[in-house]
Image (cartoon, rainbow, N blue to C red):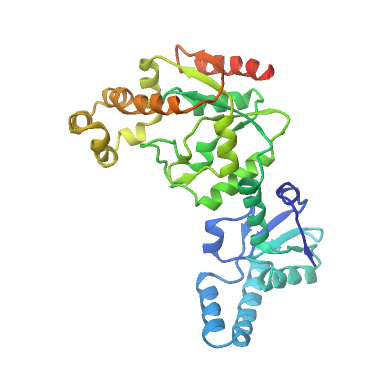
Amino acid sequence: MTLNFSSLPQLYDHKFDTIIDVRSPAEFAEDHMPGAINLPVLDNEERARVGTIYVQQSPFLARKLGAALVFRNAADHIEKHLSHHEGDWKPLVYCWRGGQRSGSFAWMLQQIGWRAEAVEGGYQTYRRLVKQFFYDDALPYRLVALDGYTGTAKTDLLAHLQALGVQVLDLEGLANHRGSLLGERPGGQPAQKAFESALAAALTKLDTARPVVVEAESSKIGNLIIPPSLWSALCSAPRIQITAPIEARTAYLVSAYDDILSDSEQLRDRLSPLRFHRGHEVVDGWLDMIDAGDKRGLTQALMAQHYDPAYAKSRKAQRAEVIAHIDAPSLDDAGLSAMAVRIEKILGQL
């Protein structure tokens, strides 16, 4: 028996103790249901081997080899990873399309006495529901965007708002990127599908009747694309405009971007291609400051000569409503806390 899920919220509200993804590690790494553990019944090499035999020799030989491998690996997982579970344990199992891999594993668990079920359609069902959520349907959330020049601590402000009980969606956190030319973070970015899974999981936990605060972004965060329904909602979201003196912004960025500002070689690689947009003289000036170790001077120059002009240009193309302007004389913890309180009051009036 397999379970059919017709919507993403229904699937996330599954009531099972554990979600088990029995696909290969490579399939799991690209994307998986939030919270799932990977217990592959065929590893990457085994899956490729069975597939080759299926195509080049015969489906029967492939199924015979696949069955032996699946049951051998499943037995190993039961002995090493699942033996601690009690008799009332209730796992939900899925594979690529709800076929033999998940069906066989769920059957084995059922024979032990565990209340296992498999997802009808497997990962393909889950991915179809995510796609429907972000590519077909309108997003049922009221977004409010924090807008402002680079260095106005909008990402940190989200954390302060969340501490007050405000609903927030941290796009840059989910994308593992700070959303700028120098925004790379350790570990790299997730795959596009995994990013969409994380977004969907975060959004479905939120109350559609209350505003959700996000940071105003471009259509891409690093290499990842904001999916259509979310991008549409973000473009039309009312803005809260954050402003701060360039000295405060510089101090904030020097601290927040210390990792990249300390990597001279990577900095040069990222900034050198901007010669086409900003000119040789400007970029040479940046490179000279890199060589001199002048993090503060470089940061302020990048804002004045690159980030601020780009932001001003993008603002002219936007027609979103600005519902409040907040001037932040400082961007330290106390300053951000004070801004968060003001924003919470603004949201209460919406």
